[in-house]
Image (cartoon, rainbow, N blue to C red; front, top):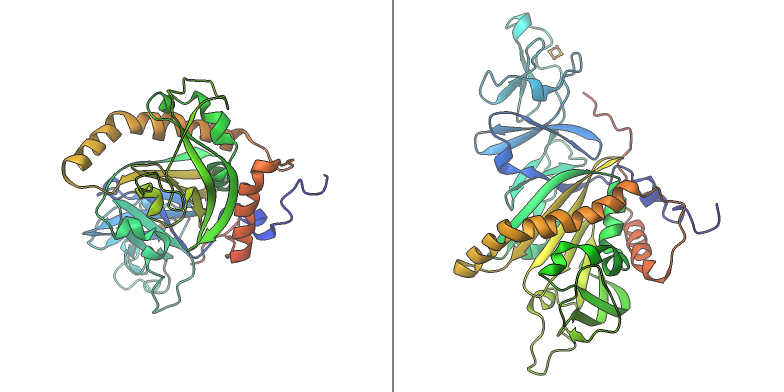
Length: 376
Ligand code: FES
C-alpha cells in the first residue's frame, strides 16, 4: 500500500467501525414503539425499546439467563418485561431482576443481577438513545447537546425518513460531505426535475460551534432548468446571496444566514450533515448500527407555521419524501454499499473528506469497541 492511501493517519477514526461512545443517537420514530417491544442495534449493541406509559425505556436486548432476546418477552406486570423462555422479569427503569416466575416468590437470584439500561429521550418525534458511560446516580449529558439548537428552539414543520442501509457509517458521513459527488453522482437524480442543484468553487473548510463547514464564497444555483443527466460549466449561474455577499437589496439567504456562516454543507459529530437550501434545511444522521450497516435518518425542516407549514408538509409527503429522501439519497446509499476503500487515492475536492477525518481525530472521541458485549 502506498503512503497516504490507507486511514492510518486517523487512528481513532480508523478504528471506529461501530462509531463513538458518549453520544445521543436518533433511532426510530416514537410512534413506532407501542405495546410491542422494538429491537434495534445501535453502535453494535442490541437494545430493546419498550414503552412504559408516556416514556420509552431502553434495555440490553438479552436475557442473562440463556441469552434469549428480551424483545420477544411478555408485558405481564406493569413496568416490567418477562423473558419469554422462563419468565425472568426485569424492571424497565432499573433493569433489575425483580421476579422469577418459574422459581417462586423467594427465588434467591432475585435482585442479584440486572440488564444494562440505556437513557432514551423523545425529541422531534424520534427516540434518541445514549451510548456511553453513565455513573451510578448520575445523568447523561442533555440530549440537546447533540441536536442542533435551531431544531429545538424554533417552531418548525418537518418531514423525515429513517431506515437501515448497507455499509459502514463512515462512508455515509464522508459521502454526505464529499464535494465532488454532488456535482456528478446526483446529476441523474429525479429531484433535479423540481429543484436546481447548487454548485460552487473556491472551497474553504472552517470550524464553527462544533460544525465543520464547507464554505463557498461563491455559491450558485443553476439559473436554467438543468435537465436530467447533463452537467456543464457553460451555463449561466445565479449567485446565491450569502451573509458576506448580500444581493443588491442587501438580502442574504435566510437559511444559510441562520448559522452565521456562508456554508451550504456542514457536518458535525457524531455524524450529522446539514444542507442549507434557500427555504429549508435538510439533515441526515449517519447512525452506526454495526460495522456493515448504518441507520440513515433524514429530516427536512422548514421554520414556518400556519398555511405555509401545511403546504410544505403536503409537498414533503407528495414529492420530497420520494424524490429527495428516496431516489436521491439512494444514490448515496449505493456508494456506501459498494465501496471497498481504503486503499484510496484522493484528489483535490477530497479536502472535505480529509478535513472531516482530521476534525474527528482532533476531538479525540471514545471509540466504541467493535466486539463490545454488555456485561450483566
Ligand atoms: Fe430468559 Fe431463561 S432465557 S428466562
